Image (cartoon, rainbow, N blue to C red; front, side, top):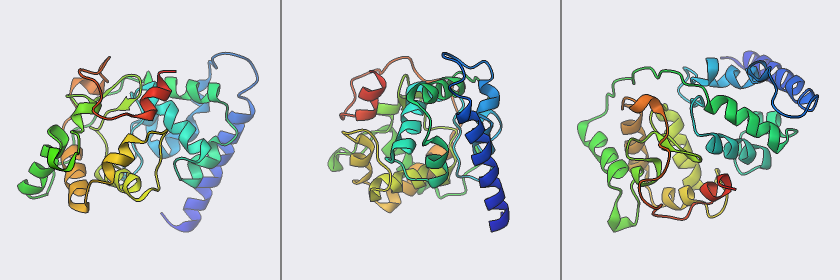
Length: 239
């Protein structure tokens, strides 16, 4: 996509979301036309929030509502840095962001099969070990200990890790490691990501993005065990 196309697309998205925001306060409670109001979201995240084909924008359909709400608030309030998202959300209220989050969380849509990985078996094996077992010697908890043994997330605030593109997964881990991305304190993901090296990040992202989505991608209702690390995003979603 060239710069002119990007500029036009961005302007169109801002216009559409601005219209949605301007009418957000027309009446209290739920908006029956919410599916029309979130068209600006699907401009990047794909039809019905199923994810875009460019390998970066993530799927948001079916993610836990508490997680989606936290991310919308984080973009609006500056914990996450992406000008388009921040600009779209800066005028929206907490109630409206919760409604958007509930809308996408309620979508029950099939996942496509993952792309076959071209990575060496050793790379994928290293990624799977970190995901399943962590690395106790470096005090790195397993991804599965927070995101669920099926890796489909845990309601209300822990997202699934399957069905996401490699580039998005790697970029988010790198963002937490470098301090570009933040969450509510204590920022558990930042603490974990700082202990990962570049090889770890790529291996985890390659393995996760090559796995099929189990259980229809639905998050577990509750954690199987207590979290191995304090996580502010989980606490915030529980309020």
